[in-house]
Amino acid sequence: MLPRPPSYFLRTFGCRVNQAESQELRARLAAAGCAPAASLAEAGLCIVNTCSVTKDADREALKFLRRAGRENPAARLVVTGCLARRAPEDILRAAPQAQVALDPGGELGLPEAAAAAPERSRALLKVQDGCDGSCAYCVVPRVRPRLSSLPPAAAEERVRGLAAAGVPEIVLCGIRLGRYRDGAVALTGLLERLLRIPGAFRLRLSSLEVLEADEALAGLIAGSGGRLCPHLHIPLQSGSETVLRRMNRPYTAAVFVRRLEALRRRAPALALFSDIITGFPGETEAESRESLALVRSLGLCGLHVFRFSPRPGTLAAGMPGQVAPVAARERLESWQELDAELRRAHRRRAAGQRRVVAPLRGGFRGLTEDFLEVGLERPLPPGLWPVTLRESSNTAII
Image: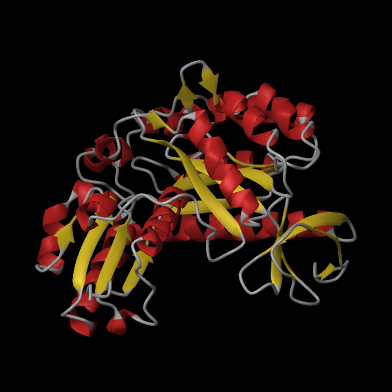
């Protein structure tokens, strides 16, 4: 009798690309006969997919690795992701028994598996990888430097498989999603092909750089009849022109504002979110206020805010004028207050309106096309469900 494959515990840190890679890995593990363990302590195999975009991300992953060693020293420990690429020596200091794997599937000897339905009702599909940018603060081009794109035929096959499995929302993601290109097919061309696939599903895009979110894309969103979600996440990072120059971002604040205006002209219902880095080296109080004022004027629906974290080997790590921790913390709190204000306003605008929700795991909550998470009056199975949002609480009325 062949030995039974080990049960596994998979922990994922970081962005949607990491989550998509973990989702693919779960499908490959299932195809190899591995089942998820009930807990870390019961697993024969522990896989940790790490992030390294900030010091906090490093710290959380290393803390978990030490915990894994304490709670289950007998398990085979495999570590992958951006921290594994950037600093494998840090991983081995925290967990000397770890196996550092750039390709965990290959390292584990797992066969490839066709697209499988994920455990939740939203699937993440990685269609692009790599970044060749030169932002002063970012370590990603060092750990994922090679640009690559999933061929359109392969993307179509994956989407068809997910749709056939009943997945209602498929999120296309990439390290630099707007740089998707396979031959003559760019991102909008890929989307046009995927939108022709029949089925009761919708597509959503993950983060896009502002210069790659053009009017053609907005027109495609507006004309898709809801099959391409009217929601974009476009990182700004700072609303101060001088800070953007120090960051080596490839646009000005004025260009960012004009591009958002153009997107809204083509797709008026577009819900726009953004990223902000506060406390960048040399940032003054005046620049911080300038940035807050500009973002407040943009009519965004929400923010992801990060306090600057120096990454070894980046230009920003050695820049003068590192912001004092107390000042950086105060600025972070101001941004968090603005984020909460923007999200409340987004909810108020939606109150009493019709939306289409994809139920989240468990079915008691759902996600609207414009990225509002709402409560549901009763649990719903996977699918796309038209609802009306209550005026008072944004609970969806079925």
